[in-house]
Image (tube, rainbow, N blue to C red):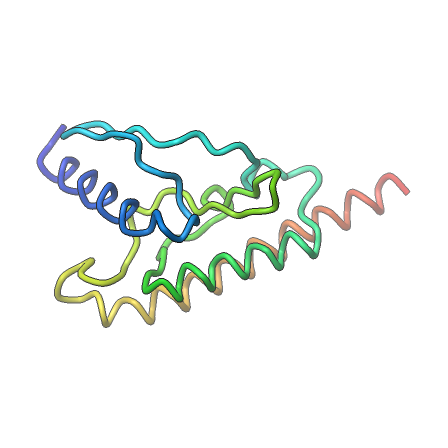
Amino acid sequence: MPALGRYLLRREVAILRMLAPTGLVPRVLASGDDWLEMEFVPGETVSSRRKDGISGAEADRLRAAVESFHASGYAHGDLGRRDLLLTPSGGVVILDVATTVGPGWPACLGPLLLAWARRRDRYRLEETIRKAQERRHAGRTHFA
């Protein structure tokens, strides 16, 4: 693995460990210079719900999770339908935090990028929810 890849992996591991107490990311079980093992979290990504879409309650859960993520001092920066996992127990897990911005990440530009990344997260979340709810509505109309 190239040096940049190792750096990004170490960065992601560090961010996952810092965010672990929030319950919003999978726990790191182990890692090395070029590998990462995370806990398995059962659930479905919003992307995997293409046919059925999501409910209003699920949309509210997604919004609350992203706001909690932001309240923890971080922002994803590249949030999309494959990064949001709805768990059977009613939780939300945020995946792929490699692009996350937060305290010390990145060292110099973090504070400037944080506000931008939060706005981008909110925008992309609302787009993801809108599309998923349109699918849900279209599915009901089609089978009615």
